[in-house]
Image 1 (cartoon, rainbow, N blue to C red):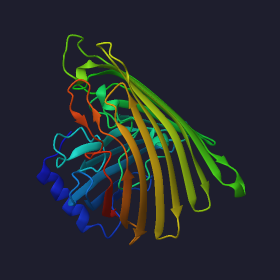
Image 2 (tube, helix red, strand yellow):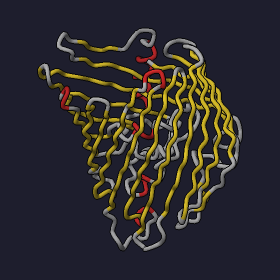
Image 3 (cartoon, helix red, strand yellow):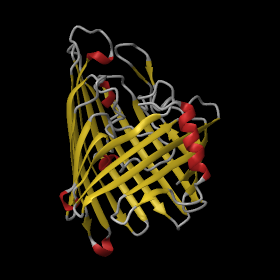
Image 4 (tube, rainbow, N blue to C red):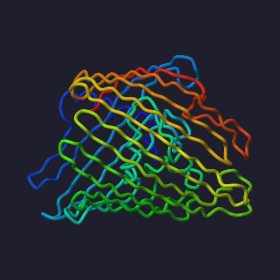
Length: 361
């Protein structure tokens, strides 16, 4: 799922030249449309190596809708990225390559929900977004998902997914079956998530979420390759967001497990997270959070991260982010290759800072 670099560079230049206006490409009276959107960013940080460096990252996408009748429409989205700041962007051997973030097509059935297929935006994001509030940090939960399916970026997205989503009153639901692609080692997988919104009036709003996923590999049991030793992957999590005034508080617990064909002990991550977002004004936002992750019987990775971040909106679509993360974790060791395991390209014991400029259109 790659574009040639020159092709995407040309598209980004085209997008940037029109960024001062909205990016609708086509709009029809029946609600059909094609839109262009994206994100351009530059970040200065000492996260990767301990030495201060600057990195460019970008996303470019097209979303589309074609009406069939008043109750049904064909929908689709394609989004590509380069130098993604996320952990486990493992669909690219080189982070400077453009890779598919989302590529899917589907049907919008109005009150009967949406059915999408491809590299979709997983419904489990209703859960993972509780902890995923920072521009600077990587998401830790479900980090072992690519042991079974190398196309997976945690449980956010992976190839060959058929997903159904709908809202029933105050309840949002999502369910998916994961087939994988032709090069994947995945035999099958499935996931689901449910979110309930409880409006308590002056006391605020509560949004509890539960989520789970399971996958099975189709590896040759005679293989001795490391990734081919994984047999099953499972993930589950429970958490909530609480909104009151200009403040959002998030709490979650997540656990994922990998079982192996050689009968060795399961590799289990247990992750606790707390986040707080305070929108001080239309221009300023403060974010802070703590993450506590332990791996048992796998690589032994430990994360003890406290992050504080400030966002200032230069315009409605552009922001400056600055943050500092205090870390007191420990690197792990791969039990098959014996290589050191860091997280997000850095030692979990090393503090880091982040300064970024982001423009979205």
